[in-house]
Amino acid sequence: MKYKIFVDGQFGTTGLKINEMLKHRDELELLSIKEEDKKDIEIKKKFLNEADLVFLCLPDEASKESVKLITNRNTKVIDASTAHRTNPDWTYGIAELNATQREKIKNSKRVCVPGCHASGFIMAMNPLIQNGIVAKSQKIVCHSITGYSGGGRALIDTYKASENQGKFESQRPYALGLSHKHLPEMKYVLGLDSAPFFTPSVGNFEQGMLVMSYLIKDELQKKVSKAELIELYKTYYSGEPFVKIIEDDSAYLDDGFLDAMKCNNTNRIEISVYDSQDYLLVISRLDNLGKGASGAAVQNMNIMLGLDEKLGLKL
Image 1: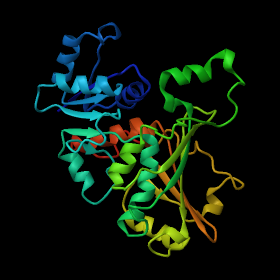
Image 2: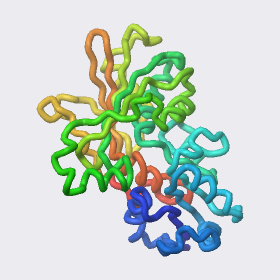
Image 3: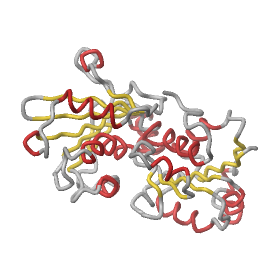
Image 4: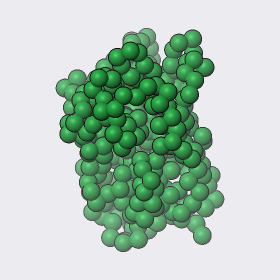
């Protein structure tokens, strides 16, 4: 049996990546809409309802409109936008979130792909919250640096334009109104009383990211050492093929530096821990186009279709 797959928004960054990841898979039939027809509602509606599974790689409002066009009750949907990430009728697409999340995804017809920054933050903090180390009332500080592909086609074109070569050499913080679009899901999924104090930045590299979560030891509900934290992560994510817990950061770092791009072109997320007398730092490293977007979308598709979860994905 071949599953019919339609990527609505197949010409955007995430859509192109998903198509690239799926095009050689024999068990899938990719339905493709011509670029000149992508705004024709009737043609798009036909594709949306013909598919066994649809990826929505669209702006929020366009994703909501596409969902309204689906009348086939058997069509499964994976939304890569932020439109449904705090909607209780949709399943949040981190299979590793807890012991029951993978089964929820498998049985769901509506799954949302987490944001890239949110994935790194949630996967670092959730084990600590679930084990009573971090309180839901705690104020958490998080900073992230991502490759410029996270900004979509417009930002990619800006960074690659010949007239801009040498212009954007530094790390550039953005969303300085402190209201980044991933904040609602960070708060909602973890059940926090307030969203983290989150500052993202874009670096002068195309893909890859580091999400850094900062904790004050005196504010934790339990005293915990770095070694104990590493063991906790190892236990929580035991058996998860796409999660790697770093036990020896001296071997992990490159002369003391942490390269944001070492997980590129994989669906892997790596979690490492650093400490001092008063503070703990947890860093998630992942590919913003992999586990942070298209890779996570494909992982969810595999689960929803009852396929091997690792199919088409690199560890």
